[in-house]
Image 1 (spheres, rainbow, N blue to C red):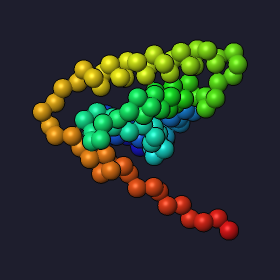
Image 2 (image 1 turned 180 degrees about the vertical axis):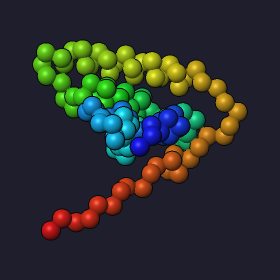
Image 3 (image 1 turned 90 degrees about the horizontal axis):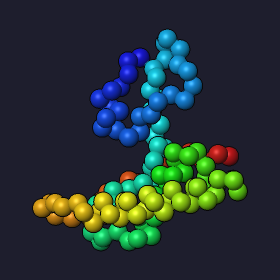
Image 4 (image 1 turned 30 degrees about the vertical axis):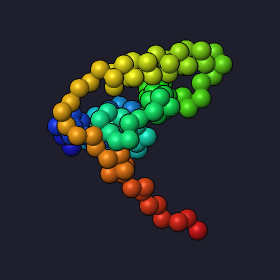
Length: 119
């Protein structure tokens, strides 16, 4: 399998394989769950709230740290990272400029995936 370089640049669902790939396996794997909770926050109507920016920052820190909830030893660092990324993200969103009309947020939301019932 070849490395999906083009796909990795345009599709955030491609990520590096966590285990050492064999010669037959690609270093890239498709992970449809990758960052599914982080939505586009720029140029949308209605505008995003501070809480939504913080929620995106929290999701980002969870993803890169691997922690859903940090241990006591890492709690302060984890929360400091969330606050720093929230501030930087808000600054970015306030600084960006476009002439494009705002996009409808409802149209950007992907429909929930349907899973077969286990019975």
